[in-house]
Image 1 (cartoon, one colour):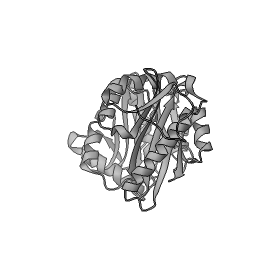
Image 2: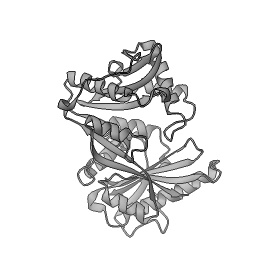
Image 3: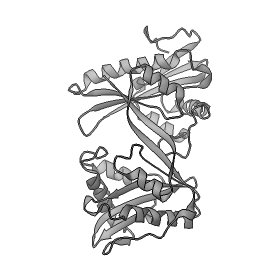
Image 4: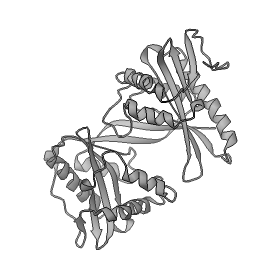
Length: 326
């Protein structure tokens, strides 16, 4: 057990705190998330949140520094947790993300606030060791159904900087016949073309807020080894031997997912994205899928939300992203 210094320790003498032991903490952590499922309306089919498996959390905890995870326990029961991660964004900002949960029966007693304060103090110490050049920020997430977490973040000075919209499609009767522009062909992807597709995606997003730095070989391998990867569901529009646009889909737990929609800037506003999405939805229907999920910018900055709504998708939940100066 560890001591959390004032003012981070609430007046809860029956609660003890400790850092991560390792993968053996996975079952208790998953049980904590399950306990929050109903009150926070966690959507197990979402592309933006999940109920992790014990195996997934064993792997996650095996790679984490124990000092960057804090648990609160009532006896042997894990009743709250918070974990830290960080990365450098394309503009040089160091984003320090903390993700926490408190089981329903222990909310409203200052436990969540205490753990957030601990996380901020730990992040400040980490930032002092990193070359942030004054560009470090706290980050936190709370969906539109996580009412207590949203209230806590706003009370602590966090502000929403972006909102993702989770969208859902179920009415396959609305599907219309896809049409691609003249000289643009839809062809299947050969195994030796997967890197070409991956590099094209990075190139198409370059210069946008979603664009990353030069992608690495490690990222390519992660792309190839994604769970449920199904190359037969990739819909790619070609201009001769070069990809003009692509829509990548997969099936998981009986639900269809659209993970990528991107079009080369030279071919935009020609209906390519819409046609490829329709082709994918038809393919998913033929495999017996009755529901399809994707997410996009809720504010429709690039017109994607309008396109998806035109096809028949609807917003089922929003996921704000919160930030606070370090």
